[in-house]
Length: 145
Picture 1: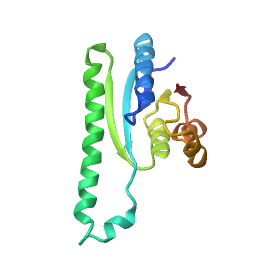
Picture 2: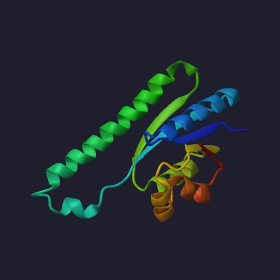
Picture 3: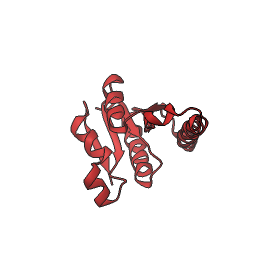
Picture 4: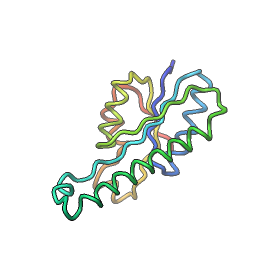
């Protein structure tokens, strides 16, 4: 039923639970899994002041990239003995938009992700990534609590 499963990871405990669930499901269905980490884009106006903030801007970008790579490498290493096909990918952009885009362009059959990682009030005001993915994804979405 599911041949390709997309699992967005943000480093939260709920994302980790979703990853475990995805791997169990993938194993039972002999499905491929891709772990995706989306790094939110930094505000574009920060880079305009390259004489003062340009170096700091680049350091922040580099640190976010390294942090994402470390997260994905750890997940891949932790599950290297599973016998599953596991891919990883890092993308910069709006998390919910990039998850939906990857699900569609990668022709994924299912997205499995953790439920809201924000506090209840902040999540209510801003909306959650998982909520937006559920509403806009081109395939079924399983939210794991």
